[in-house]
Image (cartoon, rainbow, N blue to C red; front, side, top):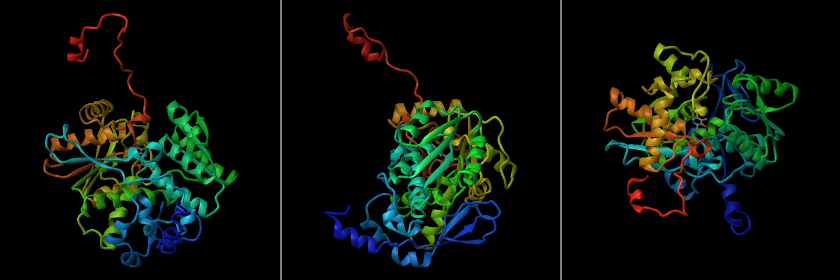
Amino acid sequence: MRGAHGLQGRRDRAKWKSFITHLECSETGAHYPADRLATLSETGKPLLVRYDLAAARTRLTREVLATRPAGLWRWRELLPVRHPEDIISLGEMATPLLPLARTSAGVPALVKDEGRLPTGSVKARGFTTAVSVAKAFNVRHLAMSTNGNAGSALAAYASRAGIRATIFCPEDTPDVTVSEIAAQGATVYRVNGVIDDCGGIVANGVTSAGWFDLSTLKEPYRIEGEKTMGFELAEQLGWNLPDVIFYPTGGGTGLIGMWKAFAELEAIGLIDARRPRMVAVQAAGCAPVVRAFEQGAAHAKRWEGACTVAAGIRVPHALGDSLILRTIRESRGFAVAVPDDAIITAQEEVGQKEGVLLCPEGAATFAAWRVALTDGRVKPHELVVLFNCATGLKYPLLPAGIRIDHTAPINYTRFASGR
Ligand SMILES: *Cc1c(COP(=O)(O)O)cnc(C)c1O
């Protein structure tokens, strides 16, 4: 951007301002300073970033936004990075909202395709902000436990920033994911245990090796990037929100982040008080939030023996469990679990009929939407947004391809039937 756009760049930087004021404990509301690198609150709960929304209101208008490049850094006033030179970006763009035409039977549904982002998943949003903050505070070594997509995003953004990254995965993490993490410059370990065992190694490394832990909700900066899904959605729908959002819920940053984004947008006068119902979608083989929601519980107990093809939502115990449940209830939404066979069927149907290769987590939202239409929790006229949080290309696909012998005569009538 410097050089040809030097003057514009300088002017742009002069106008740059984050309206971050402080951090707040999500449980007690206690305040913490914003001028040092934060982890959890004193009570061990996630911290949330707060901004001077009255000031942001005068600055972040629809007209100003319209002049800025697409992508999440256009929301700089409501992001936690004070200096533009600290931004670590890989070209995040606004992800498309794709109408479902052939599988929706005339019922309005849009897929927000997060698979278009750098590293092929929604995690890019969280790591462009979190790694930028880490750089601003001179962090030298980042670490994390992950099932996959977060690891690849951390690896990419850390390498881009020149910061070391060390990542721990359960040993059954797909090879392609582990290779992807390594290819983007991180050191990756396969741990003979589950995700909590990986988390334990990272937590000890914070004190023993001086790492900064970027695991889900252990710090307040990833959620700030994730919340931009909510900003972007409102803007794409002409400053309206849909009736219902189906989000594949693992650690919960997407759901909690969007709910926070809607409150911030209303406070700065960009949307009114109407809100979508937030639906947390989980896999039947790992559904702690659905179970807690149905029991009316404030916390979600750990799910034993978690097992699903949808690795991004295979989270047996989320640190933000009570925030997830609070969001669902405040929005008058609900939580729904779908079995793996329904996930796979949905993935095939949407791929074959719409040309959109959903990830299993995204396919779960499609399956859940169908269930909710059938049981009446969602009405056919309601505008629904389904989040596809990664490209389907990141997951193992079924073998395919019909063999053909080019040396033998070919009977072209066979192609009419697709055999
Ligand atoms: C991380 C992830 C999710 C879950 O998002 P949370 O914000 O952790 O709830 C869903 N789908 C995919 C593909 C993911 O990578």
